[in-house]
Image (cartoon, rainbow, N blue to C red; front, side, top):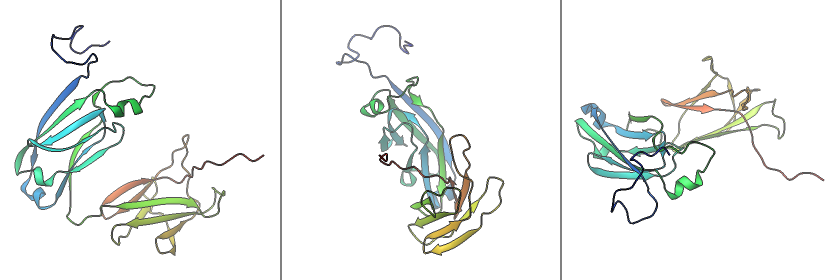
Length: 213
C-alpha cells in the first residue's frame, strides 16, 4: 500500500512473482532553429529509480542513479520546431537497492527536467578543489586549484555578489585569504564562474584518520 493499479494483478500480467511498476512520461517541447547551430542538452535532476530516455522516437540512454543528475547531448536527435521527449521509468532496479535509505519509496520523475544549449567549443571538463594552505589550520588561508579541458579564466564571488580576491600561487593554484568555511550548520557557499558556467564552491576538508593511542 498504496497500490496504483488496485489490489490484484491481471491474469498473465507477468511471469514473475513480484511486480515492477512502470511509468511512461511523454511531453512535446519547441526548439528554435538557432539552437541547432549550437549543442543542446537534456538534464534530468532526479528520476526514481531506473529509466530509458527517447527523443523523437530515438533511444538516447538510461540511468539508475536516481539522486544524481544525468546529462545527455541530444543535438543530433532534434529538429526545428516541435520535438518529443519520452521516459520509461521502472520502480525497482538493482540501483534502487543500493539506495535503500530511510525514505518513502516513491518512483517517477522527482526533480526538474531541463533543456538548455551551450555554444560549440564550450568547456566540457571543469575541476576545482580547495585545501587549507597549512594542514590542520582551517581558519587560515586556503589554496584553490582549478583546471579545465582548455585554458580558461575564472572568478569567485561571495554570497552578496562581491568578487573574492585571488592570489596566484603557481600554475593552476590560487590563495584565498581566510574564506568563510562550509559546515552543515552554516553552509557558506561561494560562486565560481568561468565562461558562463557557474558552480557552487564550499571551503571544507574531510579526512579519515586512525586514532592515536
